[in-house]
Figure 1 (cartoon, one colour):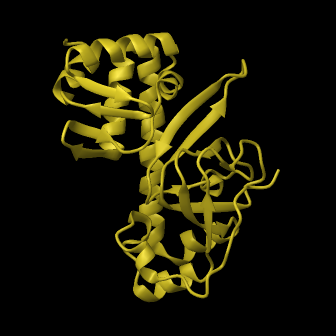
Figure 2 (cartoon, one colour; figure 1 turned 135 degrees about the horizontal axis):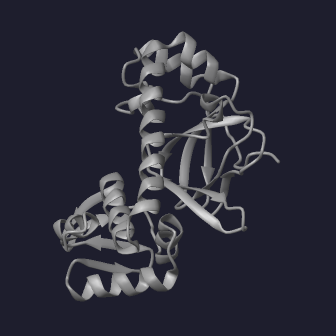
Length: 240
C-alpha cells in the first residue's frame, strides 16, 4: 500500500522552514539548503492517513504544521493510540529502526502540512550531516522512553492515575495558556484518551466529569483545558 498525500514540489522551499527545529538546528544554512532541495511538501486533511501500518516505508516526514496521531492495531483488532506528535517533529522514520515497513499508522489529527523525503535519504542524512544525526537519535530516544513509561504505567497504575498522567503528558507536549487555564492545543477526544490509557470511554467520561465538577479541568468536543495541573500531578502520583 502506498503512503498517502499528494506531494508537490514548489520552485524552492525556504530555508527558514527548518529554523529552530531540533533535528536541523545544528546545520549550516548551506546544509539546510541541500536537504530542502531533496524535499517535497505535502498537505493532509484531518482524519486522513499519512502512512499505514505494514505499508512499505517509502518516505519519512517532518511535520511543519498540525498534529498527528500514531496508532496501532492490537491482536484483538482494537485501535491503540501510541502517541500524539506535535509540529516540528519527524514521523515515519522506519529506517531509524532498521525497518522497511511502517510499524504503525499515522493519522492527521488536524489539517497538516509536512515535508517528505524518500526513505533512501535517511542514510544520507545520518552519515553526511553529523549535526542532524545527534538530534535525530535524541528524538528517537525520547520516544522509546515515552513508550517504556506508558508500558510501566499500564502495568502498575490505577486507571485514574493513568488518565491523569496522559493529560499531563499532552499538556507538556502541546499546552498553551488560555483565559481558563492550560489548553491542550491538539484536538483530543474522550475516545482518544481511552485508547491511549487502556481504559473504557465510560471511565474516561466519568472521571473527566468528576474532575470538571471539582474545577480541575474543562472539557468539550475535542478540547481539554487543565485548570488545576497540580491536582492532576498529585492524582497521577497517587497522593490525591
